[in-house]
Image (cartoon, rainbow, N blue to C red; front, side, top):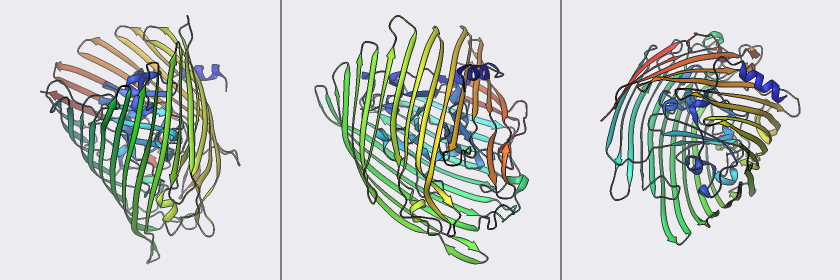
Length: 627
């Protein structure tokens, strides 16, 4: 693939750049996700930040992430289905999704712990940070391909109350109530309660959720005291995965899913002595899931299909850590210890011609870890390196590392970056313990990746970036039909490619941006492209402010052809598709904003997965009022 081919594809996109939705990634805004050592050195890693109006105009985290070309979000049936995120072609469970640094992963689900980002509202989220590349040296198990961190807003100097309500053309709606303001002493906080309903993308599909999210923090620095929490509930009705959806499914009964989640994260500085600061962290996550599925009927492509059944799972994780940070001026270092206890259990069955085969399991795992990181800035050169040792119970000790450099060329508007690292993921409780397909001898999945980029500042507000990357994923856990059917370590997958981005300030009131990503993800043994992963993706936007009170945005995204599989029809190639959407935000009063969003303006008909129709044209009117 040539650089010329990549740039030509980007130039052919209908509207330049959705990257306008991604603000420039300043060191301070991403430090909690990309590094433990703070702003001692500018980050050498691939970063993206989504915040402000581009985030406020979306309903779910999946919607917001769809504007990042490095990420393909597969969301069959809108929010009613289980979404999958593919970061540079990596498996969905290779990217850790966090809420303010606390992972949302529950390893009892059948997707290896992958997080369904469609069920996450953007209400109560101030910004979304995306860091690509292996980050196990920072976060331990799971971060083979990257991290997505959802940042909850902190306090404000004065009390601010916000109400918002949205009504859509598909009988979808959303209501949120929020507060930000000062608390006792130097602490400030926020609290958001939200309810949303995604309407019906196809007959019978449903999705409803409510959540309460809050945060109390001394300030926004990474070592300040803070408390973050979230409670959420959701319920969905949709066709099962690989069923062929409403177009091809033989069984018309829908699957019902319910989820409940409770999360608490705490950070407390316990000692400060000169340039040394010691901080303690603790976090708790409890996840309850219930799935009642009609199954998927057998076909000429699958003699057995998927049996009907029920599953009720519970996952709890408690973690604690102690870290020390030393700031030496143009350098900083961090080191610490962490401990984690996981408890997962499942009660359920599969229905084989009236016989209920139990699928329940119960597992516990204790993991200990030690980490160290250092960052240094010298002239135009910034360096960062980190290492971590994880010792998960019942598995071999894992050592992961990463290093990167950033060089601002003297006398030229160029910045060069290069980085590399390793990652690992412990087998999920489902993969180890499920009595039907589980395998207690599974080994951890591992990754090794490197990337290099060049950034050229064309003019103030106009920046072009080109990045090349290469990643290898080994010991991938895959389903082997057998007999007997079982999950096994067997794959080596290689993902390589390039991404280009251009942010262009056309005038003080007009801004454009474009991203294009080419990611070739293949099974190394067969040379076959992995399912559900487009080779090409672009995302673009054009923002115009004709008046200080009005902001107009046009967005375009393109998803290239990709392979998919459904039991009724077997393997198929899905055509590429484009989606054009628009947003208009009108400030009626300094404290009152009206937003009109129209998704899929051209009403394009496409399939996110085989048999699942596109949501079609959807309009949504939202009003927010601050007091």
